[in-house]
Image 1: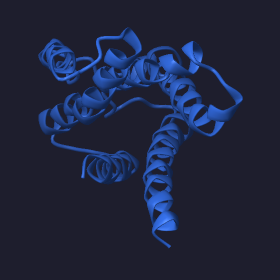
Image 2: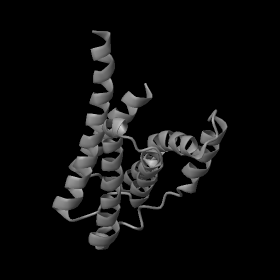
Image 3: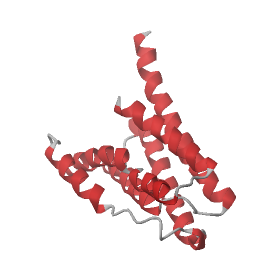
Image 4: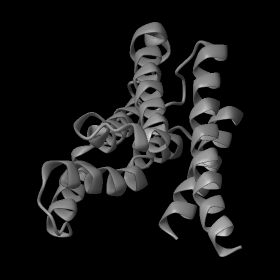
Length: 171
């Protein structure tokens, strides 16, 4: 019984994560607008998923497919969101509101991941960096919402689901 419960929690967390990604993709595709979406948050999430997926390419084995496939999904979906934001929906990007300086996140996260990592292998450092950055990547999005004073319904749903996912992973 304990084994079943142990495996259900990560599946629930990853389901929340996938739902959040799909909600944001739905917003970008159906509205054909990037209004209210922080491109800087999307960029940080793309870096996060890329760094987390480095081990997929470095140590690909058939036994790790159940872990590797979600990583590939998040990487590809984050690249698609960046493409939709900065290419297809470029005219709707709110450049004047997306002004958070991401180096305020990247530098401390990089230092923390190096200091708190026991093994200094590049894949392990990248994975640790991605764990810390995933928790901080929504800060530019929240800053943009605070600055504009408004948020669309689908964007709020995305933030709520992603926030629950982050809270469940951290705890």
